[in-house]
Length: 347
Image 1 (tube, rainbow, N blue to C red):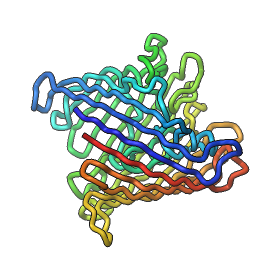
Image 2: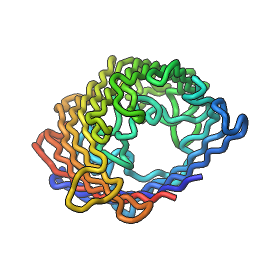
Image 3: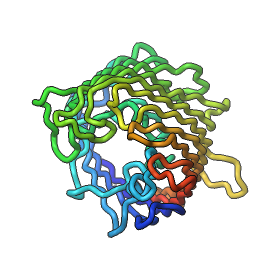
């Protein structure tokens, strides 16, 4: 079992008239993972359950600051806005197998954008913050819902993953699998030039979705049927693996994803040299670009730099700065800065 409590406060220098420029939101995740068969063996199987809660403090959530106050396409704080109701079941599935077994699968309520093109260095709760910096949403992901994921691991440097999920999924319930629409994806993972055993996979994705039954958008989907491709190239840059570079690109077709194209280059450095030696700290910088499918939207750029450090045992603190250039749907704003403070506690 695990419990994580985290919150973000954010302020934005330039916003559209009449909109909030500061906000705070919190996220709580309670996770249970229980092996039920073949315990301790590579082919073990068991249940994974995640209860998630999100709320604000009577303010505008940081995610809404980026999307609404700034009219940004790429956002400034992925996932940091309240739920109604506050708590919901985000994931609930059976999982069996492992890398060591050479195969694995999940079946149940799954989250595609937390399954495909992932990296331990790309996350709105531990590293970068904006949507364009933490997800490849040009891949048109559906929301959390019923689906199945299967993976093959023929060697320690290659993986092949297939996913089928309900395109009418809704994290607030169990979607509408009976409507017949699905999201299909195939992902090839390769460790191209690994330097250390902890090297991450570079991943190449091809996807297609049937849209939603009512044509309405949800998560990274516009509601329209279409397809696309995306990739995440990850490479260790130093012999000890402390510095890692990540390039991401995605392209959607037929107006099926909220972003037509996106690209990003991120670099992180674990345990950087500094005057005050703080263990397990990290710095990161990223430059991202996004082209929205919204009519009349400008191409938008986002630069981010963050520093994460352990304030106390089991308490991480992150300071983040973003500079957003040409917010997609705010032609009156050329540049805006976002300052963020994130605190994360794990048990």
